[in-house]
Amino acid sequence: MRVLKYAILGLLYRQEYSGYDITSQFKQEIGQFWSAKHSQIYPELRKLVDEGLIEFRTQIQGEKLEKKMYTITDSGRQQLLTWAAQPESLPETEKDEFMLKMYFIHTLSLLEARTLFEDQLRQRRAKLADLQRRYEQLMPVFVSEENKATPSDRAHEHKNGDRLPLQFNNPHLGHYLVLSKALAREQSYVDWLERHVKLFS
Amino acid sequence: MRVLKYAILGLLYRQEYSGYDITSQFKQEIGQFWSAKHSQIYPELRKLVDEGLIEFRTQIQGEKLEKKMYTITDSGRQQLLTWAAQPESLPETEKDEFMLKMYFIHTLSLLEARTLFEDQLRQRRAKLADLQRRYEQLMPVFVSEENKATPSDRAHEHKNGDRLPLQFNNPHLGHYLVLSKALAREQSYVDWLERHVKLFS
DNA sequence: TGAAACATGTAATCAGTTACATGATTAC
DNA sequence: GTAATCATGTAACTGATTACATGTTTCA
Image (cartoon, rainbow over all chains, first blue to last red; front, side, top):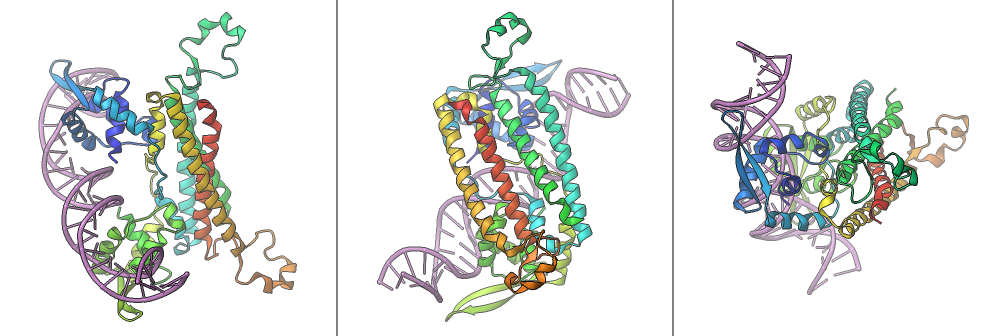
């Protein structure tokens, strides 16, 4: 599979990044769906250079701190596109240790089960709230679908800045998709927990 | 973490299984949230025996086919309970290669993106339908919450067989929880895909 | 009698985490 | 000055998959 390879190529498709920058990216929204530690990233970057899919130039930060700025090559771009357009079959398993514990609920006392379940609900609500905050921060980047290309837009174009409607050619579409999907995933988790929490009262 | 260790102990908590049986269990409902290949299971069983957490007896199937039936020990039971009652913090990342591709949507043409997205929708709908079928097969095992302990129940107790209300002490609760959660997860996935498929038309 | 399922293992490889290791820069 | 962050790497280990390897039983 080598998904990390393609995750890195995908990040470098739009701009150059250092290994540290890539590590940072995986702490942002895309980290909801893919991530890696720096100890996996640096050797992978080395490998991609050896394979001719990326290149780097050394840049000096401050007095003497060297950082390597990586860019994608034509060959890398080509391999990225081949992977990205390829449909994959669904994974049989999406691992979730909490749900494994729920399958073994009969091993717990009512109090233990309630504690575990309520803790999960608390954590999932906190994560949901964080994602909602991020979502509300992102949305002003887009012009709403209803307002796009109406005559009145002409009159206050200056208000929109670089805002574009949420459609296929929007350069922020990927960002929006992962954030809205993460939000839907957590909302569904919280809803399910709330529907079942009464089992433990 | 050694989650597989606890997954196996959890399965053996209620009944004895062979390595092959455990492999089969991971192809059932619990496989939605945890699974392992036989090549990981057999060495793990060996390790658990060495650690004194499980034991086995050899049983002859037919003429000469030997299978090892494993049971959990007191020590194994104790370690299982310690793990099961312990709340865990949420994983930062729940990997999803399709969503990684969506983050890189700008690398694709409209047609490629639409093909990928519609393929995912098709696969997720098929999975959802399969889970719904399983859910409808499981539900008759339970007496509905509304009907439980009403005077009329006394009159036709014979109709219920071993059916019990869906509450904490129900021995099938774990099975119900994983199936309803898997269903909620896939329903949420399909809903999200349907909400966004128009972006590619 | 042949295919699918039952049954158990090992070897090689790949993916990913934790720990070890070092040093520079920035902002308070 | 000092703490947080920036910056890059390697080593050891753990977790997981793919491939290799073999043999039996059941059912059509």
